[in-house]
Every structure is written in structure tokens, then in C-alpha cells.
Length: 132
Image (cartoon, rainbow, N blue to C red):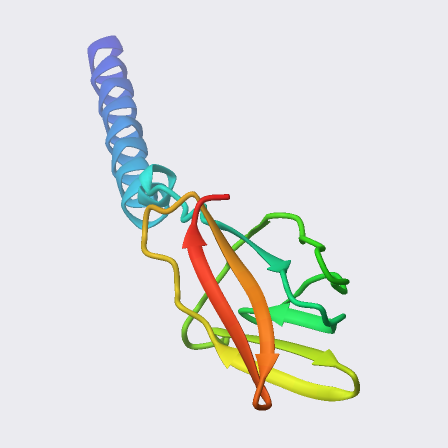
């Protein structure tokens, strides 16, 4: 009788261990792989090198602070999803709405800066560069 109980006990323990290993494997396979993926960590900012003031500034569908001539925004983490966000800068100057497509930073770039150079012929002139 004691040997039968011991064998039953070992069988239950074995089943619990198999269940835990299988459960952990499935959990890691479904969710844990994200732990090892490096999150895109590109930070972007905008500098106003023009002589114009800009309000309602947004880039990649993220709002930024208003910019006076010579101002720079803080660096912000770029959270860009091509299905939900626009690769555009929008802003208002002198009551006129401006918008311009932006170059999307390449993968692996830590910091990326957009510079509002000027407004000419009704167009916003933007330059961009990697780094500060």
C-alpha cells in the first residue's frame, strides 16, 4: 500500500513539473520574446532657426511646445506607427497653417534633430540631421 501511494505521489509531482515547464514555455513563447527585443529609442526634437514664431507644433502626431525664433524643443521619444501616425510636421505661424513631410530617422539612430529653416513661397523649409 505504501509503495502504491509513493508511486502515485511521484506521478502527481511529475505531472505538475511537466505542466509548469509547458506553461512557462508557452508563456515565454507568446510574451517573453518581447523582453529581449530592443525598443526603438530614437529621440527627436525641433529647432526654430527662422525669424517666425510657431504655435500648435506637432511632429509624427505628437504635440511639441510653441517655438519662438531661436527656440529648441526638448528631445522626445519617437513613437511612430506608420498605420496611425503621420510623418509630418504641422505648425501655425501668423494665422497660417503649415505642414511638411519629414524624413523618418533610420533604425538605430539615438537622436535626430529637425530644423525649421524658414518660410518661403508659402512653404515650410525643414532640414534634418542625426545627432544634436
